[in-house]
Length: 288
Length: 288
Image (cartoon, rainbow over all chains, first blue to last red; front, side, top):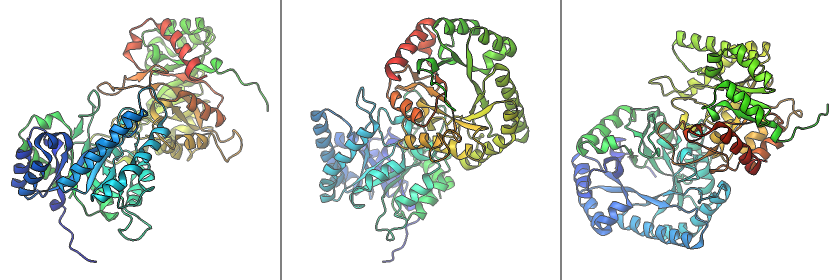
């Protein structure tokens, strides 16, 4: 099968948290005016607006929802807490399906209070994936395990490398469970090139085994702020060789959306349209 | 050759930065009173006090200097800066020799301003090791590459995993270049058990190839403070399975000092002797 490859700029998607200052209507309007074709959405603002209304709003603006953030938090030991997490993830799958996206991003969860058992926590993630993946697949949604930077291992996500994410994903069919390649989390890893090739299904049938469900961009800047959540850099401002990453992901056969996801209060304090214009400029200069 | 193994408590060493509130004489006196046999020292306070005087002070207190922190910062691109770094590292080697320690801990350096070339920075570290290792070996000092947590990759140390540190160290004789196993930096890594075994020379001649030059302990606590330098946890307060690490390092054949190195202003605000007593208690409860 042969098909034309969309230009890189046509694949650019803006994750909503990059412009948190925008309401959903502002986001839909602003992205459409900027000529974007995709947006990445978050559950909380979508639910506040109404899932069906949000789906209509975005569709009417000519936009595709490239991913929904986020499910996950699978590591609880308490059975009631665990059951609640699974229920919540089924709701997240339903929301993703309603929004028309095939990608639900998972932040897998940290260590339960008092636990030091990383291995056990990772196994509970695998157990949760086994329960959720068929449910998601029936609704056309793929679970996308996002490895988070190791600085989040304790309190947010015990999946810290792309290798770990792939070790988990590969227990399931590629169509059901994939991974997220996010430059902010993975840039420091000297095995990342090889792991991206692995994620692309290198050595297997062309395309058939690809695990890359999403490709997200942010730059790494220092000093990190307290809590280390909101210190991501605008593209080009930091240490990440974004073009190198894009070339590796290209070489791995990925042709999907390229989402810019930057959590940074300095961006939120500015005019959203200006931020988006800057994202497009930086994307062209540092990624294209 | 057979020799008796000292008890674990007899191997406990206090890194000076854990009790920054103590002057060098207070440190020597406090550690001797607590029955410790070793201290890890830092260059700046040692130079302020005088290297020869510090060596005498510590020796007269019956203490061994288990390591000197730190050399490194090898990643500069500017030739003058690079030459200055090598000069400074030769001075650090001389100081280590004068203090009677065989271990100089290296923090290898981050990315130069504006650079995104992690691979190139790592190669410049290898080049610097090649220049320094013979100089250090002639003075009875082994260079100890410390992999730092990936959150320091941009601004402090592009060597982020034990595997990377070993990849560098193994280019040189084991007697000249080793690695530091620090729980704070490495606890999140699911390959760490295998890498510790590799560091111990598994598969090689027993003991002959061991790369473990130092074993350091701190716990991981959250939230991380701004700048992420001074947020280390007292033993037992955090997410690290310290005993598991100690058992792995034991199994790898390491019988050297076990250094507690915690950077935390809350510890510095307390009475040093109380902090040290707490360290000993926690060490017994969580490591022994």
